[in-house]
Structure formats: C-alpha cells, structure tokens
Length: 206
Image 1: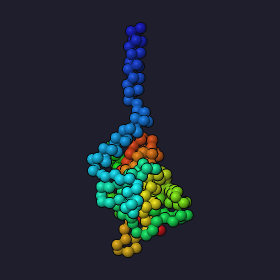
Image 2: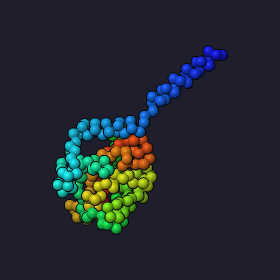
Image 3: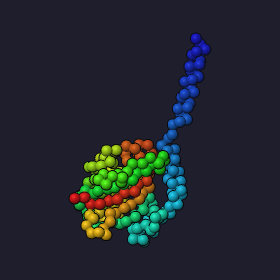
Image 4: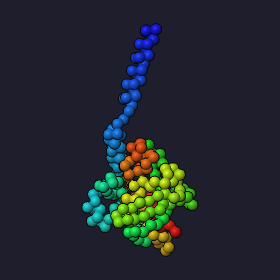
C-alpha cells in the first residue's frame, strides 16, 4: 500500500512539473509575438520606416514593401490606396463597408470576405476630434468576434479617404497592417497574445 502511495505521489509531482514547464507567462508570450512579427517582416522583405519619413512622404508609404511603424499603437501600416472622396469629418458618424483578409502570423490560419461578391462587413464609425470609435453591425467579423471593432481597424482612418465609388476611376481606400495583439480582436488576438496581418478596403456606405 505504501509503495502505491509513493508511486502516486511521484506521478503527481511529474505531472505538476510538466504543467509548470508548459505554462508560458505573459512576458514570454509577448516575446514570442515580437519574434513572430520580426520573422514575418524579414521573410516578407518588408522595409520599415518611421513616422517622420511617413509624414514627409505625404502620409503615404511607397511601393509594395514599405510599412510605417506607428509608435502609439505599435501597428505597422502600408497605405496601398488613399481612396476617393474625403476623410471622415469631426463630429461625423457613418457606415463603412469593408472587405478584408485576416491572417494569423503565428499559424497562417485565415478568414476573409473577399471570395463572395455580396459578402460585406459593415461598421458604424464616429469621429470626435482625434478619437474614432466603431462597432460592427454586419458581416463575418461580427459573426466571428462580436460587435467590437479592433483598435487597429481605426488606425488608418486619419490618413485615408472614405468615399463612394461614383466615377469609373474611383477606388476604395486600401491598407495592409501588421497588428500586435494589443490592437487586435478581444476574443482572439488579445486573449491569446497573437499577432495578425490584415489587408482591408474601406468604402462609405449608404
């Protein structure tokens, strides 16, 4: 009987030690995230510039490899197209139609609404001074993560135009972003400390 008890105690200690070794602290997860982002940037041959250079280029990035790192949010952003129309005005509220591609930098899992022509995501956006707020009211992001819009989706808004496609040469605004967990979805990126890559277009709704 005593031998059985000793065996059980030994097994309990073993399992406890294994569990402790498997547990990662928040600091360790953040370090892994930084490594994942750095590796993603290197593998993609992206060129990172600072905000001073970004502003000197007219709040634009140049070419398909250049990203600006925005210090306040930690988001890396590339503006592919400024878009037609005009920027959201102070005090304005409007609906914004988005098409997007979301890719996990850690495991390459993805979701997108770009494969079906009538599958659109819609969010209600408001601007108060330099502060933007939004909620999803329709689409895949709403179904996947709820109505809360990731902070990263609001980061490009001061720099792009949100217009309607009226003329044949009108284009939607388009941005690409590398998003740390702190600026991502609450139920996935933040809770799991996971970075994501986004390719998003923005268009004024009706």
